[in-house]
Image (cartoon, rainbow, N blue to C red):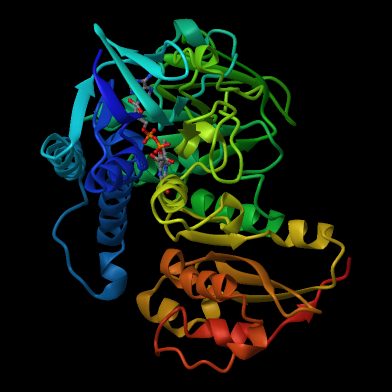
Length: 465
Ligand SMILES: Cc1cc2nc3c(=O)[nH]c(=O)nc-3n(C[C@H](O)[C@H](O)[C@H](O)COP(=O)(O)OP(=O)(O)OC[C@H]3O[C@@H](n4cnc5c(N)ncnc54)[C@H](O)[C@@H]3O)c2cc1C
């Protein structure tokens, strides 16, 4: 039975860097992967989707070329095979990089296969039983499929399988009006598909403030994406020649206008993610799961079982590449650097990569109001941002929320061109725990989107509770 100092299950965003740190510290490490090295981000998540976002943006700008005085001969076409080949190449290079790094890592053995716990110190992978004093779980998640009548018997795509498309759908039906669904909605609309998004809630991305939801819906609708909110009692099936003639898939739903059926050529299900913990035999190791299958961890990412940690999406403490990587940093700091870093030190940050993007940090305005504190808010439309005007990209607005008494910035939602980058100056102020009036006199570079942030910090208005 091969014995190691550490076993790592999964090669997502936390496992490989942890393998690197432990192996460099002289520990004997085994790392196990059942599928593609690099996990979701590299193979089916951030990397290929942002590559598609770039192709979609290029198509959109080509359509708008005349507005900029750029003359293109003929109409804009999409070569979906090339689009896919580009995404595959970018993902593949990233995957190959991680694979060769792990394969060549001194003190580290890479196992290919599905890992299951036998007990607290033993893991089975294929015919091998590995043992270690310390085990690190980085198994990530996969698309969750909702219990919609007819779904099991109807061809459908998930965020993973949609990556295999090398043709543009005629009409893409998307169930789920949240982050993943909306990115694909705009990507495929810009590739020329008709797109309809069905969202059960009364509005898109319901975790965001209502004004942000409205603005995002407006941006997508302006590009011709059909959005159906408040769509309940969904069912799907193969289209017949009756109500749904002309399409292969029929989606029926209740809504404000009664029962409706829409037909489409493809169906994408984007209704959230679930952790890959149902086939890990975690209970044999004493690793406890919550009601949704997430591994229960403490603030230093230790599970309920001694000597076992869980990092990344599977612990339910984050759902992003940067949170998974930060989990690695927390575990490594505690184990190797005598530095007691904690998950609770982390400020929530993320972006929605529609175009223009939404950069987010901290609380929404609604969450800030719920704290009972005296809240200040500052907003600015992108139509009043010079750089946005010069770029011809004035959709969206920026909003910053602060505590009137402490001067602490509580959160921001920046929806506009360049806002996935601009939000970082606020993230840094929040990590530095500086009150906003200490940074509002900072001079930023003109012309940038970021140059308006100090101005906004000087323009707060009280929010009535
Ligand atoms: C469409 C989409 C777009 C996204 N875009 C972004 C974005 O722009 N920015 C961002 O920050 N995040 C984004 N995310 C989220 C991001 O991809 C994940 O949060 C990130 O990959 C972190 O994952 P992880 O480290 O938890 O594990 P994963 O990357 O999910 O990797 C887990 C690995 O474990 C393996 N595994 C599972 N079970 C076992 C087992 N029993 N034995 C062996 N191996 C196993 C899996 O095969 C997988 O390779 C996106 C996600 C999706 C779906």
